[in-house]
Length: 399
Image (cartoon, rainbow, N blue to C red):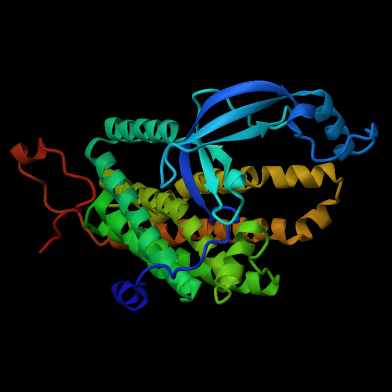
């Protein structure tokens, strides 16, 4: 992992000229200072001349806008070189995002446009509620997890640093996305597991189980992404990335996303299975590795059922608007599954689920073999027996 980080470490994301599309544009903070109602006809908000024909969506919208009441919002730019500058924007009655006085917004800036059209509202400023929610999350983790929770938050921060300062810039520089993902995921896994659970045999077994499962996910993902001819270029964002950096392997980027996305759930499964086997050994030190494996795998079967269902529902929830569009179009199941957008999610879900399922027997077997090497020692002295043994450290072997 260290060698991979040293060889692939990027010098920073390569620069490019802004396209003004999507997220690739200049933005500034702004505030809505005034909102007044005006006639849409007076404001000229209708882009389609009203003909009275409401049989089409465009015609119906144009008629409604012509007869409706729009809002003229005055927005003040609060950051950048044009701080204090104001501009107006017309908000149509059928727009999903309505503006109100005092609202903080994000505006896009296009320097090549005419002066009165250089700024436009692109989104709402959500930094305060998001920061408050993050604070509540951190507080809950620390209150319930105590020191372990603090370590988990530190590990989470380091994971984001690895993602932002290594994985993303290295991919943008043209390095193989699969190799970058494997090295980056290994770094995140090692730091997170050892930082949260300590340097012990128990944690090392979870690390080994996670690595083996990630290797399986990488192999299966590579085979089926290539076999299904998935390009990874299926929406506006991936199209923009490919346009700005044509050298990036988009199918490799898809595989990298599968590996990184599976890592978080894999950690949960491998750590839980390892802890279960260790606790079984603590409860009955005379149990051999076969008995530990059989008991641990029974726990693992329950874990598999819940985790796989969770993973599938998580991907389905993320793709719910897309699935809704297919439902509206009344497409058959075969047609929907064969489309590249849905096929990507199917491959992502099934490959990740196979890795999760495989991690249970692999990690359980490794944990049973390692912990069964610790044999119960001689009977402790009476005063020593009053102190409970600390879980996960094993017992001294017979000499």
